[in-house]
Amino acid sequence: MAIAELAGKHLVLGLTGGVACYKIAELTRLLVKAGASVQIVMTEAATQFITPVTMQALSGRPVYTSQWDARVANNMAHIDLSREADAIVIAPASTDFLARLAHGMADDLLATLCVARACPLLVVPAMNRQMWQNPATQRNVAQLRADGVTVLGPDSGAQACGETGDGRMLEPGATYEAIASFFSAKPLARRRVLITAGPTFEPLDPVRGLTNRSSGKMGFALARAAQHAGADVHLIAGPVALATPWGVLREDVQTAQQMHAAVMCAVPRADIFISVAAVADWRVAHVSAHKIKKTAAQALPSFTFVENPDILAEVARQPDAPYCVGFAAESEDLERHGEQKRQRKNVPLLVGNLGPQTFGQDDNEVVLFDANGITRLPRAEKQELARALIAEIAQRLPRA
Ligand code: CTP
Image (cartoon, rainbow, N blue to C red):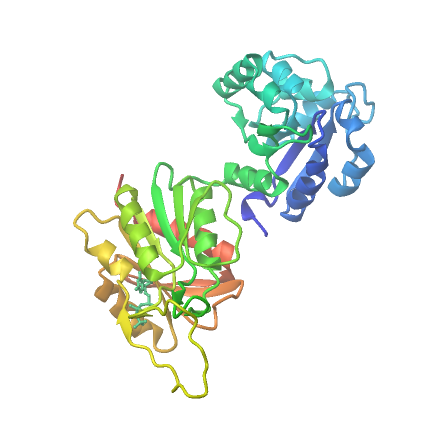
């Protein structure tokens, strides 16, 4: 997925010795695809785990491994490489490298260019759980944080050594997201954002139900964009087949009633509520406990429906309501229906589009309705649109 924050950025990506070096092949590919230029620097230990040939092919640039590399005209690779960078990312960052970094050592090219840097430094630790928990490592990491170094991860789970615990390197996709998030503007810093996304599923019996064609893509893109903008994001999702955006707290629900309960529980902690979910308007009054059988003797089944709670309207009615943003997919006369719906739901901002043809698509075109009238946003891929929408929301927020 293209991330505009990374286009045109120049990164020094430093590999140190560890099995997780294999993840850096994929990370490099993702960064290059997003439009970043990547200069690989490897410690000697790293070259035992993945070859400079592979890293050169993926980054499209010669790899540096030695302080004594004569390819830089003035023979000062440690200065030149760090001066050109928007950030240095050390991934994987080994126990040994973190220790050297914490002590300001300059005993190989990568360590030297970290000491000589004039740009931000991000480290992505990867090691065995005992090595991570070792008081010396914890002391070094605390020192690095105090020195302004950004520590990404580590993850928890199965390790190459066969043990399980903290210390595993973040997956390449998560590392990439964390780097993109690092470069994003933070207009939502310290804001807590609650988002609903996807369809709901209203059961008829244990195997059948009513749902709709919402894919959840827009809500998930907004959750990701809000996280990148510095918010603390809680995403309540109906049944969708989408990966959780990095750094986002996700809660899965099925029915409108479950979504309603989850939102009401979370809303007292939210500063902003973005209601993207396509909530079913009705559910059947009585869900059959057994599968409804198709017998020749039986008449066609019929169902009595009851109305589901209007989650957005209920949140917006609360005396201490967060800043509420509604969504509306209309099939005709968007301008009239959009403003009417905004007023009916009593929300300061409503995002309208001409659906349902946008369901499941990767791009969208929306119109914003607020007390000042209509703002049109140009057609864009959903992730770009999400970024633009988050910027529009941030602009309209009452001061914290
Ligand atoms: N919404 C909600 N709870 C519902 C229905 C809708 O929170 N039970 C929210 C949606 O998440 C969206 C907004 O309300 O932000 C508008 O949804 P929409 O389905 O367009 O509105 P309805 O009130 O159902 O109006 P319509 O008659 O057009 O379906």
